[in-house]
Image (cartoon, rainbow, N blue to C red; front, side, top):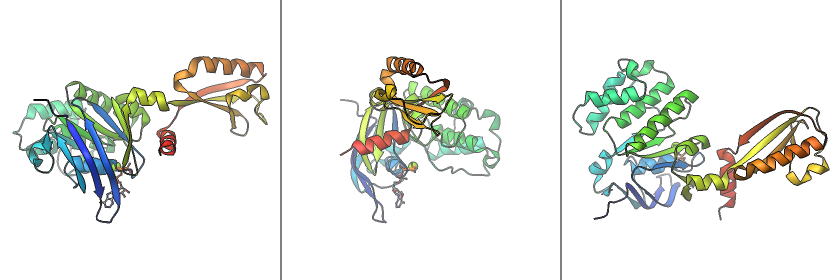
Length: 310
Ligand SMILES: Nc1ncnc2c1ncn2[C@@H]1O[C@H](COP(=O)(O)OP(=O)(O)OP(=O)(O)O)[C@@H](O)[C@H]1O
Ligand SMILES: [Mg+2]
């Protein structure tokens, strides 16, 4: 017998009672041990998709299986495989970190396992807060508690809905480390994010959802190649009124009242073009004050994708 994919989504659509259609015929297969990042602008349908797969909302049409178990007809078996870190912070303010995490495990009918809870809390740097009440924690720590709860019952699939929205850089990197360790141990991870850097850092594959439609699913490395444009900004010693004719071929844009030249290029084909540009800038007699580069933001990528989609 062949092993079923960890998650199989077929022809999923969702129309809310309001009449609004948030998902349109979404199909997607996710293999065991994959890290899958779901990207999309606000309101695209990411949380709706996750809510349906996790059994919190009902699909209007379509079918989902988790580990081969249908999420409707075989709800308990499917749900027991899943850990969910919701987008909204919802925790019991008065409970302690340890109690709330243990309790979550119990909800899945698993026998108490203090050693597992201890490991999870230590992995998330929450152990020294185990006896603190949730309401006394910072926002970032509360988010870590949500992750601890989701891991309390040793799920095979972990859904993280915007896990690092509003957390600081250090914690974001901590979370990435935890997620990677989980994936290495065989846990399948599906995360949504608005941070391209996060998807780039974490994901094996990326899905882009827009207005309820899954418009693209691709290996991350492929996607980055296709969409990874960067910008080089050259700060000039003396402002210019216009881009010199000798630099016309680069398609430069003048910014900051003529004191900056902005060059947009494909991340893949960087080296030579930049060396040539800087040489020509010097030859044109311009003085450089500073240089900086920026990667295309997720916004830019959406704009180009959505514009490009039929
Ligand atoms: N309970 C509901 N009733 C009616 N419409 C809803 C409901 N929940 C979500 N929607 C609508 O469905 C669309 C998708 O919402 P969803 O929360 O899935 O988006 P999202 O991709 O998670 O966005 P964000 O990035 O802002 O979290 C939105 O237009 C939203 O207003
Ligand atoms: Mg959402």
